[in-house]
Image (cartoon, rainbow, N blue to C red):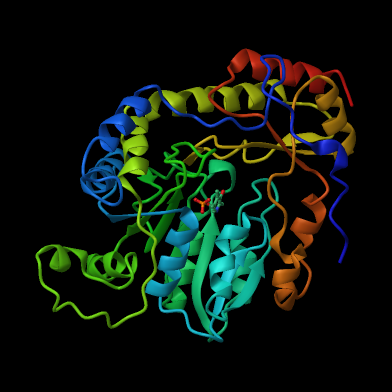
Length: 384
Ligand SMILES: *Cc1c(COP(=O)(O)O)cnc(C)c1O
């Protein structure tokens, strides 16, 4: 396997008012008051604000599924795998191109990972390849809405239904996305969101698992907290046995305070992100040797977390942007390149092979505006 590209000239640029950085956390002003308010109460760990954040987030999504707030999206993915009942030797189909957090929790359970190829044009999981990977051992199918663009949900759900296995969405990048009129977080059996530092909403670190099946809610709440039924315990009884393996995956009220504050302005920050992405799509149209990933999907709403382009001579463009004080980068790498996933390398992934040296992520966050995006477009248009 090839080594990773040399990254010595890719150290991050400082925030100095002139550099345009790739990511910048979005922390709304009102988060400071919400946190201060929390710090003065009895509850700074998991308390009433976590409950409120679960309800308000679900209502904002417009979903009827059941929210379970956790410490990260990785926690949410792990809980989804446990709730799906994965066992050693089971096979789970996951996209090869994603954040490692999607697949790492499968290693905790000795699951055999089957990497599915990326789709040309979107870099999302390719349903055609997913179908070819299905076997009798398939226990779940995982998809990731790369950059915020929903995957081909109808096709993926149809395959999952035919196999009788759950579809698990890693929606870390897709807060506010929708597919054919349905919100991400209100469609499949399990959807995991991230509230990590640079995601749409940040709680410092945090996540949310949305469950379709109400019967799983009690178990999810227990295994989020060691396997203890917290409500029963708070009722004063010590007769609550622990009979299943749990984890310590709860969200804190400090985090939930940030989340509640962010929900008050999430519509505006999403609009800002979408306007920046639209500026890129518009400004970069028709350039030879360059294509914006996921620019042509009309039946789904893009949550505009990333703007990724596929370009010839990527390193040259990256250097040119950097000379213009614009940060860019790959952000994610095909997972089968990591040594920890080496046992799961198999076959050819032709789309990923064709894209792996061509993708580049451009700055997109709420500390920039459409004029910054226009400047990036102008630099790119001047050639690289
Ligand atoms: C950010 C991200 C994660 C990890 O989220 P955490 O909240 O940091 O665990 C998982 N999957 C994808 C696709 C991500 O972008």
